[in-house]
Image 1 (cartoon, rainbow over the protein chains, first blue to last red):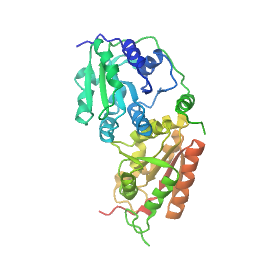
Image 2: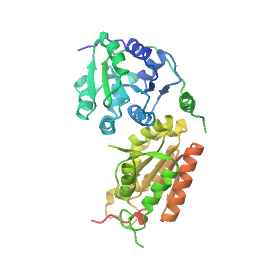
Image 3: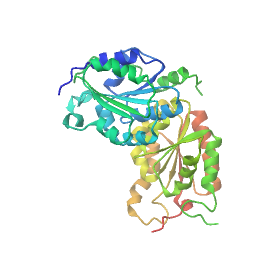
Length: 194
Length: 176
């Protein structure tokens, strides 16, 4: 099934209700999508370290157990870290939600097809790894409900696969200076640079 | 006194744990290794610490960076064979100048029975240095404790990315 969800609209709708959530973005389009919704000091943008987004989210969630942590990443980025779904399932943070924007393609590199378009279910893998909530969303009307759900306390980690249109939108680029982003993020939490 | 595989008789893993906790390290991520068994156990049993078992070592690099972003100090515990799994992910702490500390128990360098340990063992220090880490090494307990203490200080107070290699001679060859 081809989804009609627009990734920029979906991300903007979710982030409107972010409250005090901290947001980690996976490299490529998810980083641009989150930035396009409005830059924020509580955003930790990744431009590399493929496979690391959900795990940066785990470390952050363990360090900040009273803050919701949202990871916004893509299907290719998460496929590189299938084992992370096991590690996070075991760690079982109650404040971590992973939102996979799944266009079933490697969009940054020429729209080669990914595993999720060939039957691999990241939500299914996360469910098998003991995540407390996992599901696929392919209707824009469900995005508002998801935004409300994300602000609730959870029993454990949650993964939502949002099936989005496969398209390359104009890039909306945050700073690529990783030191700046890190220090800005930490300052947002009240930490001084060394 | 001779050490056994866990170093239980000389107690250096307990001293490493105390050194790390004194440096306010409250999170440890690990792929198990016999040489780290006691240290892992101490983190798992510490109610004030968080321990993450990993499926592959690079996960711990990303976790440590997230932890620091949130104000927590982390250590990655692994065997030399795991270093090769980490290389690209290490671009994250290197580029973001995030404090990063890993303790690596060495295989493939002293009385090694398994030749499959050799190639990665020999690539540990060159590959870590190639991606930008500072590498320190200890082959006896006293040097190790001092090295871990200064490495933690340099990592968390001077934003450095440091690996401490623990020589196989100190851990003891694996018994088959």
